[in-house]
Amino acid sequence: MPLLEVQNLRVDLHTHRGSAPAVRGVGFALERGDTVGLIGESGCGKSMTALALMGLAPENATVSGSVRLHGQELVGLPDRGWRALRGNRIAMIFQEPMTALNPVHRVGAQIAEPLRLHQGLGAAAARRQAIELMERVGIPEPARRVDAYPHQFSGGQRQRLMIAMALACKPDVLIADEPTTALDVTVQKQILALIRELVAEHGMALVLISHDLGLVAQNVRRMLVMYGGSVVEAGQADEVFKHPAHPYTRGLLAARPNLAQRLHAHRSDRLPTIAGTVPELFALPPGCPFAGRCPFTEEPACSRDAPPRVELSPTHLFQCRRAEVVLAASNSIADRA
Image (tube, rainbow, N blue to C red; front, top):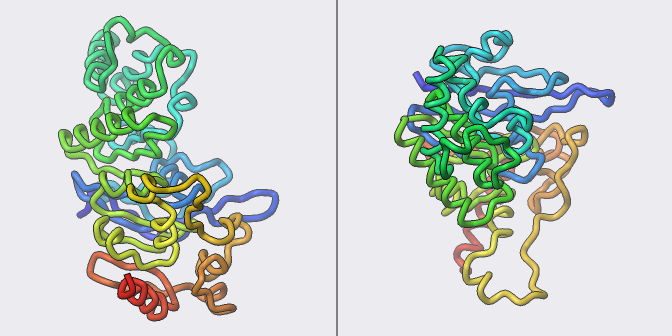
């Protein structure tokens, strides 16, 4: 039995304009120590998927499908059940620590809170462990700074504090939502190295969410490419990067300059872009969410019909109704190269 098993996860948002699907049919499984990355443009459903996995979907959302942790169904779990799990067996590093940390509470108390709630530690013991966690994640002089407030730390240090809080109870599953956003390159590397080290040390499963393809490639074993709330391609990270199949995945990879391009680029040079813009949730076609932006779109079928799943290998698949044409074009480009 997988540690975490997600099947046909769907999140519908209900507004004055009607209902819109923010997440459509997402599925994957994680074993202990396993790593998976969710990538895609802003608005593709990555963070909403993470919030649904944490039981933190917005109040105007309906979550359906199945999310099982150690066989326990989480979809439909009452608030009391979620409170027993969150921060204990499943935890999350949020995208922006300054809004995730409570500005009016001292950081030591915030790190100690899950230890007191879930492990029953007393105030003194939880404080000692909070100091140890702060030291573990690289906060200088933790014993002196344990009573400081979030605004008294740098952006990178606040992210480290978020990691300490998330790992306090050694959860089974760690979700990291854009954990290096707005951090400089050096701090990014330190944060990611810290997450890798702690995940390996405690044998946790990791869900890493990012729009940075390079970051995902270096830190996960498998990856899911999301667009319009759907997974359009999934596979081993090295498979997807070496042989991207879906036109959207190829567009993302083409828009990321390699080292040679960065070294020799002129200021007037433009990077390849994906035509069009991400449609709003209410304008998603019933068929392929990438229809219209895709150069292989065949109307009206692509917009109307749900794309079939195409298996390229036992571990690599994508969704496309024009798979033969798309793959033939890919092979033609590779032959010319």
